[in-house]
Length: 310
Length: 177
Image (cartoon, rainbow over the protein chains, first blue to last red):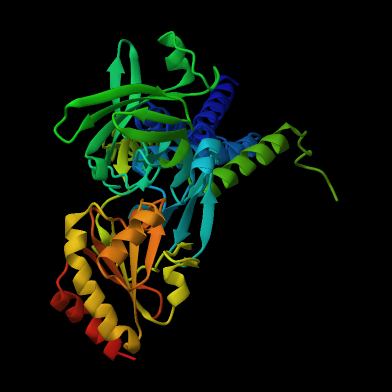
């Protein structure tokens, strides 16, 4: 009785730990040795109990435990050989091949209104041409799940004193000519970590550093944004080509700021990154779970007498 | 039973033996690589304003050889390259070559004034949102992307080219049917 309760406890714990990979993907501890070791011990313990009970009255429960062991093996293999969590940052309009998954990620173009709204998806295209839009909900892909995670982003429009549009560049980034800043770097101010990025306006020989302040950051620094307490803002510090400071301003999202000889409109919002995380093999997980549930339920039904006559 | 436990212990070691240690989560920058890496890819197309009126796009010229040149008025190498593009356009447009000068991020008035001042007669498109240069992974200006008759990228070139360099790429494409 004691070993039966122990086996059930192992089964439930292994299923819970494996399901966690599906429900809360991209946690680094799925690849930690303690997690791996527990599932390995659970697999052996469940297989051991199922083997001992295979011919006796507990064979129905043994079948359920084999289902739980299959789930644990799926979780174990995902933790052992599944990919480490990778975040793919893509510029709007570009394509990033992900050879390990056999797909290419299309980072869809976005305009200022779309960036402010958020919710832009990433389109994954397989080699056979099949495409799937990836949003916040994880999509299984072999031994991985992929999902889009919104990150702060800014759409920059620069104008000269007469109101003419000017080219913006990102000299520090691979996405050299994109007007969308993805805040790939961060800076610590006091106890807060703030995303920042850099944009250049070559026609005016200006470089602007854009520091992103979330509503919580603004509150922490005692600033109330003009656009409302739930709106982020950006601090723009403009310098010339030689690095000499030309001006600094707090810019409300979507409103033009006149700073350092530039008229800059910064639309703040979010743009997704693609997160690739390991996940249990879905067929093994589903099959094991179904076996555990149905065989477990069957084991609760009363057995027929073994010597009944026909 | 004892032998079974030994097998179980060996299985446990085998299962965990291939553990290589959980690596930290990391980020990959999907951008970059330059326009050369796009050879063979389907050409992305956006309809954008054309100086003089109307909209145009690379997709509208499917079936022709299209040479897209991304440029801006403040870019000295772009200015130096313009005469070669103009010569190529005048010489080969009758053979099916389409040259599109796609200004990046500036106003139609700025791009139009530049084109008039420099005697440019090939179509100038104004990509105020810099979508073309972003999608074609420009790492600088000028950038030239040549699209074949099937709508796929043939070459992506970073930096200014001479007339001879343009001819070396375009002539075989125009000759091929």
